Image 1 (tube, rainbow, N blue to C red):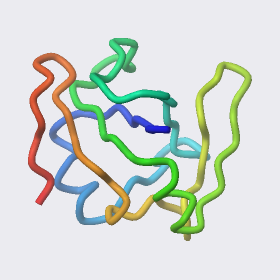
Image 2 (image 1 turned 90 degrees about the vertical axis):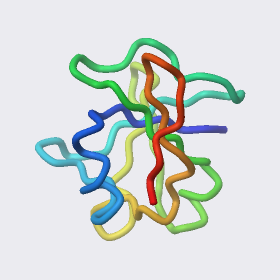
Image 3 (image 1 turned 180 degrees about the vertical axis):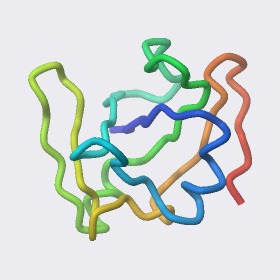
Image 4 (image 1 turned 60 degrees about the vertical axis):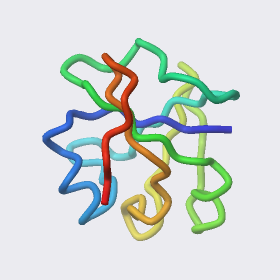
Length: 102
């Protein structure tokens, strides 16, 4: 399964350096997608990028996932964040183009 985290392109550089952090929330929020393809269009307001993560990679890194009542997956990652090493790719949710993360 794929997990998607919505953000803004201005945050990508920091996420690649520091990993995904919950910021003002307790957990990082992820949306589960069972097949490949484009990110759903229900991104949170102000987001224009989708960070794709393979759930197996996240779990292999030692993170635990739990599911909220609304179906969102929640995690604190490992050590309080999701390591950038498990990020698969970033997509512009308006154009579908991949955004380089290197």
